[in-house]
Length: 309
Image (cartoon, rainbow, N blue to C red; front, side, top):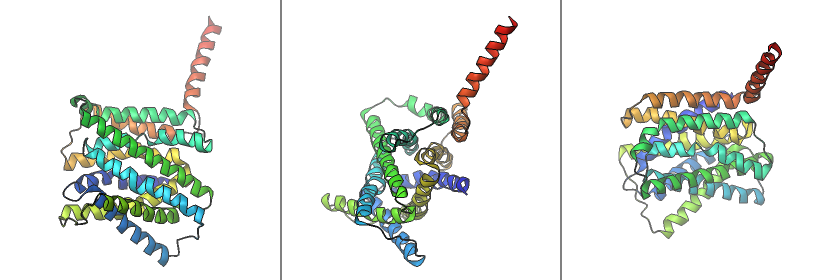
């Protein structure tokens, strides 16, 4: 079941990047994000009431939901949408692939969570693959101020996403189900977005463009309602570090979609990068220490050779 949820998330969030790109236009990004999570929150609460999925929570829990909502359903998306205004959406997805590293660092300081060598080896191999996938794009940029702004916004969004993961761990430790936490956090995220929209005096007018409405519907239901609930469930099941590693795989799906809608050209480097990403994902799931195996094997061979000599 966990493997199915993992694969589902890779494809659901993989398609979301092109949908975010299609949201760019006449509607301010703050308003688009607000509409996205208003629709998502409404669906979540209807499902919660009909199927009795919402748990009773305390005032203290609500404070954490509010913080989680600001991180997961407000600030990180403001940063990600801003990033795509300066750099390609696929490159933003690549930067978000650093989430496992942020989670490992935050988890170490906040919860004392340890990571094995296989995890770090897998992350290195996977990120190397991602770098190979986008090597051509990086070489073609002149590292202008726009590029640095895009990278900064993407990293800031990833940091917010990771903090939201840490709060999710806290909620799980207090027996709060992901559906309940996501439902309330979305409401608080909407409140934060509404305050920003009112403060900036932005128009609430929505575009009736078919592509805009279709992408908004996809981002609201599959990417938000299904996506975040399943993702936080994975955080509960396999830990924040392993759950976040799916974000290293997600850009591959985003690239495949880009090759259809944005004429992305596959090269030898991108193919090798894809293989590295898949290999890195496998390494993180291996229980036995891979590096120790090779070191012991090399040491044994060396000792055998000494005895023969």
